[in-house]
Image (cartoon, rainbow, N blue to C red; front, side, top):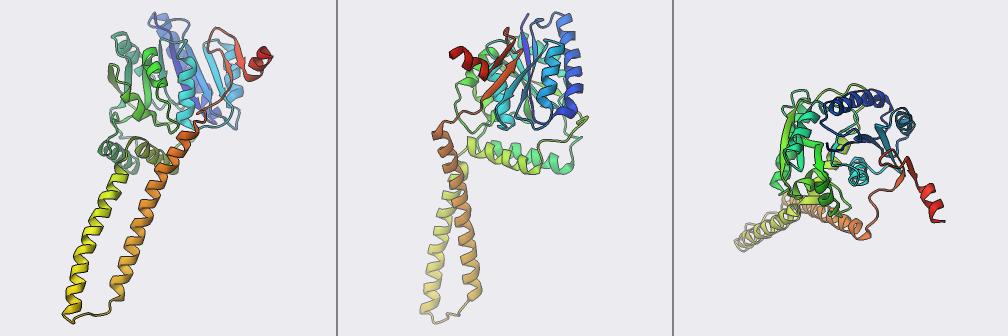
Length: 330
């Protein structure tokens, strides 16, 4: 039987953690009882520098049942980095890992199908939403536009897939080879290339707490994805520059012909519009190019994507902390 680990990034999730732990425990125990997964399987909560009592609750869950484990990051690093931290810390202990959000909007009954597809030999199993009827019209429209835009930009995204997926140990080893600082896992995972499939599921309403992805973060996430996986925006600016240059040559010929024909009329409106249009395009171009330069700057620094401060119950060792590691080295 395969050891299955669930990795759940958490940021200020004390409102949902008790119910989430209860539901996941029932699901994992059912799979263990059916001999679908090993009794050594784990539920791993990754605390992304929460400001509430999330880590305290994780410690209590682990103390009450070794099925639960925890990883505490030294500071808040964002959802993608927290998820990567969990995946990288457990990959040596698990045969397969499923990532999902703490609010359990992703249907955990799909886990059974995930395990079945892994047993058939698939290294990556994507959870794909069947419909988006429960989303608002605005969110549904923007989400669909995002996937279409990303494909237009050249990124290989799985349509209607977020971060609910199963990955084998081999796939996780492949993921570890990607060293970029600007993380967009939805775009990176399809690049691994091992056999993959998809499982459809229905997404539920959040049963407690508030969404950690307001519109501002969603827009930032979309920008991160576009600029991390495509240089087409820069090429679009280059194309636009050529078009404007060509138009300027045509207009130059027009203005010269009008001048020599003696039909020149002072036109402040034309000048004002031209100045504003060209100025806006220049600022836009500088902004897009600056975004890429900024990402290059961050990549060259090669700073760690996360720092694990403490782990409990992830492996056979009872507990790990930086203080304990420092004392051993001393």
